[in-house]
Length: 186
Length: 194
Image (cartoon, rainbow over all chains, first blue to last red; front, side, top):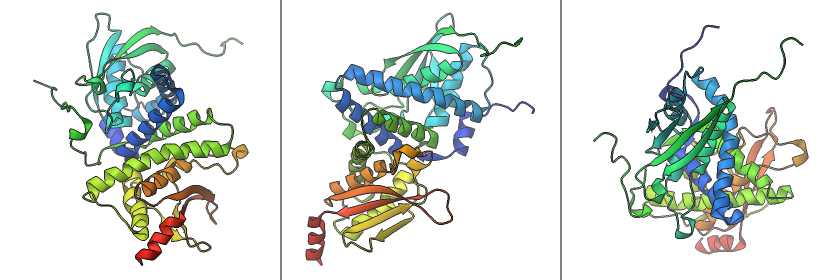
């Protein structure tokens, strides 16, 4: 089969099945509230949200690759751009921008101005330590993990905590060489 | 300056203008999230009944908010006060906003006066769900049943709401029926209002 050109985030989003963002937002809110009730400690909730995100990320990457026709990125810079421009658009219908590269090109920030997770949300005083959108960092970590990149994803800015935007720092820790599960000469 | 000021800062979430509700996310994003909700709750329970109850609770929280949101945005801060009015509000308005379509049918139960059924051939939350044999009659529609109960309860129509699979002739997949059984007080009030 001839190689197919990668598709833009907008083109994919326009052609897939979509649901009302409010259903998504409110369902996510219900999950966070359930976790807060069950786990009590805000720290534990952050951890659980990250884990849920990771679980999603490791499955979501398959759909992402299948629908986007994106082939192997030449470097981490391209990877970050693809996450921001294609990944976010394709699943959440919003685009993000990539900034603040370090000199080595292994650490950058993904900045989200629109975030469908946080409509109607305000953090009460007793939840100030909560990273409400922690599921997103888990998704990125999980998805990168499945394409052999170990990354650390942390929140630098959070609009729910009074910042002007959402900013995720994505730091590439190492690229794992691909190993085949079998030996050729057997 | 470029790219500055798209998110305006509001001191309070209530000062923010209400969006029109036209924004969308991909169905997969919702399906992934819903699947995590189900999987997480599976770790918190010992039996199917408890799992359904927890999904219903999560849905209830959504329903309560949907009622508030829609009454404010679409109905000028008014809400339905009659039984048929609120049922058609759920079947049409709520369904259309949440699931993009009016529900397939709204029927009155034939055996009991206080029972109504909303049926959907392919309920959005069940779209990618197949129930393992050992989980019997479990239906993830419990989440939607919770939403319906949340809306009804908030509007002053307390009810017991449950989700059931109903096999359909000539169809591979069963449809989901949301069974609404209103509390006695609701029917008494309806009778009084005439």
